[in-house]
Each structure stands twice: as C-alpha cells, then as structure tokens.
Length: 387
Image 1: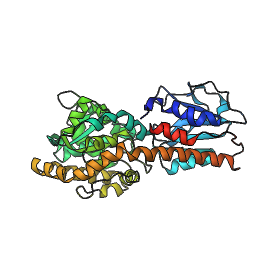
Image 2: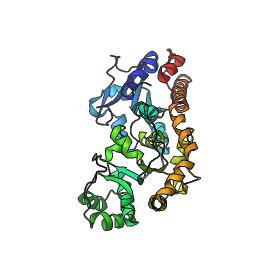
Image 3: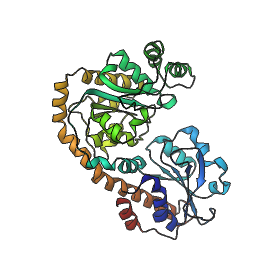
C-alpha cells in the first residue's frame, strides 16, 4: 500500500498531471494552515486550458471554511480562483453539495481516511489477537472543545452513571477547559450537557487524564504502535469518538478502523447514520449484541444518552459474560479485519478513480466552459493505488 504522506504526489503524477490539472493542498501536511501549490512539479499558473484542484480531504467542511478554501487565502494567486476547479473531499453532506453548486466546483469525493488507515495500520494484519480482556471499554479523547465538545459531555455521562472506573479513559483537558466550554456563546452543547459537565467535571475539578502504565494520552485514539496495541487489546468495547458529531454529514476518519484491526466491537460516536455509512463500505456492525438504535437518533444530546446507556449496560456485565460475548462475535470481527485488508482497498480505489473520471466527464460535456484534451491512464492509476 502506498504511504498516505505521498498520496497527493501519486494522485498528481497519475491522474492530475496527465490531465493538465494544477494541484493545491494545505501545508504542513495534516493541517489547514496554508494553501500552497504542489511541490511535485512546476506547472504553469492556471489559464484557459487548465483545471485547479483543491485538496480539502483530511478535515470535514464547515461553512466558515469556505473563504479559506476558495478565495485566495494564504497568498495563493487569485488566478487559481478564476479557473474551473475541483474540490477533492472526504465527506458526504448537503453543505458540500451546496458549496459545490454555489462555487461551480466539481465534486471529487473519495475516502481519504481509508487510505490513511490502510497505511498506518498495515502491520496489524501480522499480529496475533489476544482474547484476554481486563477493561469493559476504552474511550480515548484528545481534543474536547468546540466541535469536539460532545466528548466532554459523554465523559460526564460516564461519571454520572458511575462506570468511569470500569473502563480506560483519556481526557486531554482540565476543569478550567470544561468550564470555559460551558460558558462559550458558540458552544453546541445542550443545556443538559452543560449541567452534566458542570456537575461531574467542573465541580469535581477533573484534571488531564492519561491511561495505562505507559501514560498514553488521547492521541492514542488514532495512533498505532506497540503501546497502543497492548492498551486497546485489554478493552472489550471500543468507544470510537469521531471527528464529526454535531452535524448531519458523513465523514469518518482512521479512528473507526482501530477496533476493526484490533478485532474488538465498537460504539461509533458520530453523526447520525454513520454506522450505515460504514456498512456501505462492506463492514458489519454489532446489532446482534449492541443496541445500535443510537445511530438513528437526530437529537445530539439524546444520542449521547443512548450511547452512554449502552456503555453502562456493557460495563456492568461480568468478565465471564464479556469474554463469552467476545467469543460469539468472532465471525463478525474476523470478517471485518479481513475485509479491511482486502476488499475494502479495492472498493475505495475503484471509488476514487470512478469519481475522478466522472469529474472529467462533466468537464468535457459542456457544463463547464473549458474542455480536457488529455486523458490519464485510469487502469494504471488503479494498479498503482492497489499496490
């Protein structure tokens, strides 16, 4: 599998460059700090014969990002914003569709974080799975404010249900951070959420938490290494605290693939319908063992209540019951891991290439002013991406 750090380069050389498409992306890699031209070649600035592509595929799109992405931010020449444009992205949302329509952007969707997970977690296919468990669940949190403040509200619910000590929890904030979030005029937390946070995190003066004897922090939710592997193998249920929660968009990151490569069941704390979105890529979930009705609850606070209730139910099971349930889940767990390292790669590569080809079709059929005379070798691109 190609390294995700070189994904843009591979896409440029095999899809964009042969089609005279100029590539822009954010620098440093993994941030949205500065929009720059690609470093892989020295193409001419866009003119009447070329498309411009914006890589905004690592983070979800929010309305306030629009000026940053499309209107000459961070010193990029305004010529970039006069040519036809493609938006490379990793979400399905009505907001993205509206932005693409308003800005005459071609929509190139692909599962960026699927490629990242296949790269970062590739060694897991060679590691043994230990059926021994010592914790009922793990809930790892790094950022817990602003769009991620739901993690604060969920942690408060774990304390409220007296199951905090039944699992492994990391929390990268202290009570001051919690208090400031409850007082923010921009907070998306409900009144109930804020009350629980004040009662269980602020009044009890909760501090930054690290977990396990390795002192692993919340970044372990996305990292893969020996320490993280041992930590996560100890936990029965993985509470996957995703990037997107307070929205209707579908945007999953590498986090959801951690329990899959560890062969552990999970609860997906994300926007409504995210379990269905994951199943669209061929994965199985655990409705035979876990009440997954939470995934269909639109009210964000009520969805957290349903999630916390299910974590509570599982946390109160005996060690013997958890071990027996884990044994009963083996068919699903094995299927998901094998699917991840085999068919899933083919699915997301096929999707990436087909959606790029669709952008070219739209560009060429008169709906966009300019036409493309060059054509990439799509079969060769698929072969490289699958290597």
